[in-house]
Length: 147
Image (cartoon, rainbow, N blue to C red; front, top):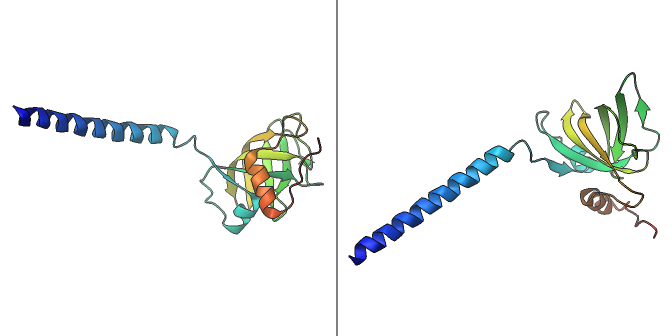
């Protein structure tokens, strides 16, 4: 009788482990397109990602690099002080987007140009995404905002 209880308990644990593994695999499969890794311009210049890889890049919009083309085509460069990466974006930029301000873009690095599908800009005069602050601090160009 005791061995039957023990056997049932082992079966229940085995089923629970299999269900947990299956649930984890399904969650990972469902999120595979939603997970975008952050890279600084220095990291992109050092080891360029594959053209099919979608990732986020962040830094400061380089001064004098913002060029508005025909239609909604915009090009600019993003820098972290160590490297500068050219960016092309088609669409409407956020209202707070300007040179020497923090930004984060999502897209792919194709033929030496980051082709952005989404651009996010700071949302007030002191905010900058944590990843951008960390990348700028690593390069030694981050300055604390004045209170």
